[in-house]
Amino acid sequence: MVGDSEREDFRTAIVSARFDPSDFELIEREDPMRGPGIQPVTGTVTIRRKSNGSEKKYRAGHGSRWPAEFSDDLAGGVFG
Picture (tube, rainbow, N blue to C red):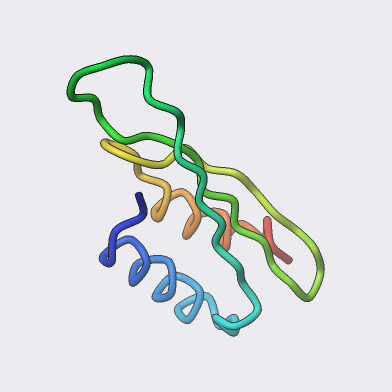
């Protein structure tokens, strides 16, 4: 569900905020399909900072902007 460019944005946000990328874990969870037919892929990503246990969930999938929201949260001190 999480594309390569989103993973790179995730890593870039961490480095730009002067954190260690190995201190963060990205867990993705795809929502179940709601029936037959073509549907956008949606779900959540949970980002956890290993060293202090802080974590936050973001909506992910088609049309989401979780990498930008995560970057804003890093700058705002959500992860310490």
